[in-house]
Image (cartoon, rainbow, N blue to C red; front, side):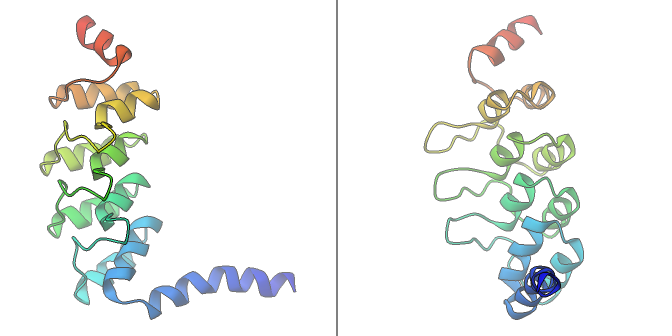
Length: 159
C-alpha cells in the first residue's frame, strides 16, 4: 500500500502535466521549476503572459518560488514583468519576499517596476524588508526603489 501511495504521489503530477493544456503546463512548470516542461509548453503554443484564476502569471509563480532558469526563459520568451495579479502583486514583489538576487536582477533588467505597489500598499522594497532580506533591499535601492518602512529608511540615510 505504501509503495502504491508513493507511486501515485510521484506519477500524478506528471500525468496531470501531460493532460493539461500548454498554458496550464507552463504554470505548473513555473511553479515547480521544471525548465524542460516550460520549454515544451512554450513550443506547444503556451501564452507566456496567461494568468491563473488569481491573476498570477507563470513569471510571477517562477519568481516567487525562486525558479531562476524558468524566470530567465520566460523573460527571454517575452513574459511581461510588469503584469499585476488580482491583488496588484507583481513578479518582483513575489521575488523580493524570497532570497534570490539573480531572479530579482533578471526582472529588473527586463523592466520590472521597482516601485510598483499592490492594492495593500506592498512594494518590492517593503516585501524584502518584512522578510529581513538586507541584500535584496540594497539591490532594490540601487535600482531606484523608494519607500519602505523604518528599517529601509534608515538604510538609505546611512548609504
